[in-house]
Length: 87
Image (cartoon, rainbow, N blue to C red; front, side):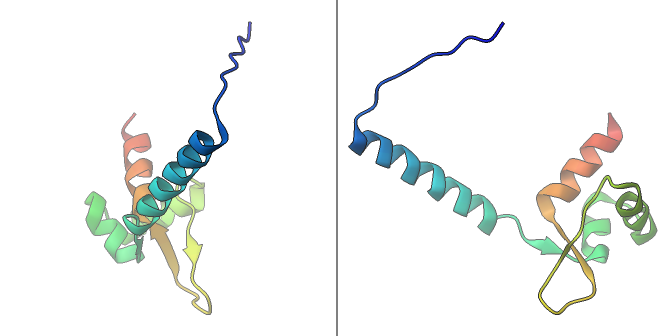
């Protein structure tokens, strides 16, 4: 059974809440660098072949920079994939 709760927030408070959420999201992006396959492997103590296997299996999805053919991985996704692999 779903429960719905409604709260009233004045417009200024709502704008403050949105600004705070956006600021936090931007900070997370700044703290989440893209890593090469070698850097990702070193981060989690695995080989580059393991990173490639994680990518092939879909556990780690690469990002590709503009004009770059080499995969890059967000640090947070690499750490999450390592954690998911352990459990």
